Length: 210
Length: 331
Image 1 (spheres, each protein chain N blue to C red):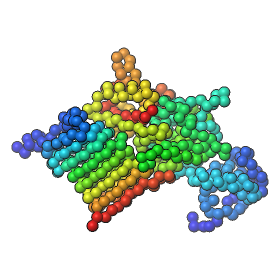
Image 2 (image 1 turned 120 degrees about the vertical axis):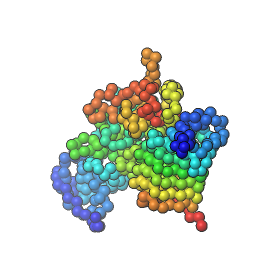
Image 3 (image 1 turned 180 degrees about the vertical axis):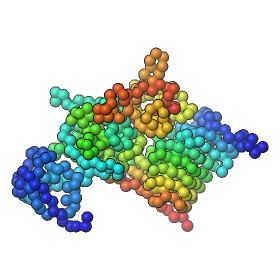
Image 4 (image 1 turned 30 degrees about the vertical axis):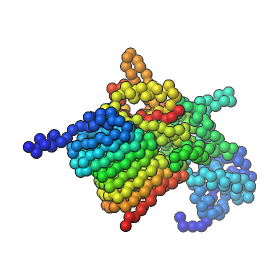
């Protein structure tokens, strides 16, 4: 009985991808409390809303779970697991796309090189009330910001992320990262790391909220 | 090392107090008899200078030759050679040559075949160079100029705070070599030509910009094309639901528009080397079947491969299983 319920609660991302591709710009796509198995690519402004803790996007270790190539995108109430990418395990942002994570969990994702949780080199990431946990990469186990990316993480949690440089966050080039009221614990040291270059100056600002 | 002064001793032909002439730089095998105390920071910087220049500078300094100041300025501008990955045992060797081929006094366009990646994991950069060589060789020629002192200025284009900037990097034509005498990274003399330094110069300039060769392993080929052209790149992710015909159409349209392009393989690609970036040469249709033609920046791999072994025609039915992104640079 339990097994049947579990089966019914798991679907592939094929139909979700179709809904995303066919959505009007700025539309809201509401997801049921299910596990969606597979990866998705977003190329338009959209608001995807799940049920916190119950809507799971499981990339099944077959690629970056969510790639955002365009638009202003809000991802709300999603748990993203088992993403595997070269750059960006759970989330990869490019093409000046702007992504907001709200009440999300990025957990157990891996990038071979950078950004086990999220990778952004050309774009903007803002994460609020989001948990980065158990993600891994060479640089930026939780988040990697390069190029001239802008990243703000606020009122969020980061724990048990692993990387050679920046267990939680690594920033390179001219990326700007602001961590505002983020609880950071048990990530590989250095938990937050600005990778200084010969002529580059990334910045990471830590803002404590009382 | 905790000292303020260091004694530098070399021995050979010019002798103490010998006149120094920048146009008569002694060969690598020439040694000079000098024994002199010089400040520590200068001595440490010697490590990064080619042997001949080190000797020349030391000679000039001992004899109070005015050329010493000029050489010191050069030393300061080039700084220490960029670091390398910790596992690499390399020595820097000067390669005499030119950035680009010439014929009848005119510079000849660089080509895709000039790109031979070598042993550094910067396929994204080398693939980008090949992509620009395919579509806009003149841009590469304008990117590099040779200075009177034998160094080169490589102009990188970077986006900072939303604005494009030109970053000139002064590069000495000295490149990492292995103990067997072969180049370690981008081949400065592909096909044994000594007038095709441009890929190695751009690679070294980027290494200096980022703080070392070890800092440029792994990267984004879209950003690398921007570094050369100063124009934005757009990424198209290739997912399980991507229609390969859409990718073909994008490549075809970009090819007509003269856009540099790269294609990247997944980590687990089985039909082509994985986690690798390739320059896109174009879209072709033959006998009703469509292909995307790509160039592997491994190139001729120091003569161990034929050029045609680095050019693949990817049938569309192998696209999704092997590749995860197409990057197109603005034209």
